[in-house]
Image (cartoon, rainbow, N blue to C red; front, side):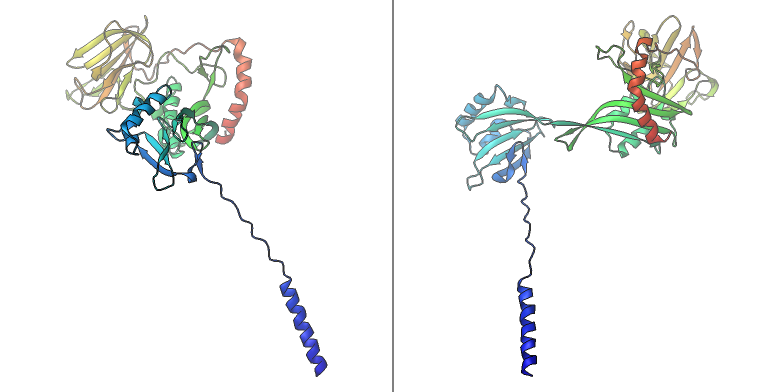
Length: 406
């Protein structure tokens, strides 16, 4: 019995020793870095973030921090060569870094005139330090594509892309695509670059690198290219090097809809009788800009009971165009205008039931249907640049085709 008791004691001691000898993993303590901004460790300060209110000036903002009038005057005199304090504007953000003691003394004032830059006025030394900083910009590249499920603007908006890209694309394709006629299910692909401030804050679209849209069953590419390598002049060409810039724009209004077409017999909504309608009506909100579809000279500019405010432009010995029912005319007779120039605003003057522009087209003195007319195209790319162009666009085209599964 005694032996059994000794064995039990020995076993208990062995188990106890093993327990005490267990190695407990050492906890790894991760040091969280202090958050910094504008080059300052924010945890070191009492921070005030605000925006400039009506009536605020640099001086009044400093006075609110218990800085006297005379001292404010001296500060303004010292910083004015770099920071024009009169340039402070309402709703622009500013930051005050103050001491963490009970006095909360102002140590640094930071003003942001825009998303990209900021001014720093540092009061911590006896000599005030002032400087301007530009935040780092990162350019990121993106390619999107597939099939349209809604309009181009809505598609880009849903992809969180700045609206200016839609306007840029509409301008590039203005000679070859009427974007109001794109249909759901039409394929598209776009490669573009975007700007980011501090690698995180979105700052908009930088440039379009390549794109294509399916329009009336045809794939239309657009690639920017400078025929003169020493020039900044960029034109857009399709995959064969043919310019996208035609002599006439497809429409005098961007993103409008056709409310009435060219017809030999149409029931007039105001006169209530059947008559020829020798133009194309584009409905749009009042005040929408009307652009001239090709360069030329203003032949007529004025008002008639039927046309309302109107402008007629002579482009050459063959072609003329006319724009009716304007709310406001922005050009005068004899004035030379360039393609895409705004010549008036949409209205409903004259015989019109609602805001629209009636677009009329003359060829050799005869009114014709602009939508059915085969219009002249621009100059093709010169042969000497063709091989350089093809080499540049080949990988871009492959990327577009791949994402849209062409």
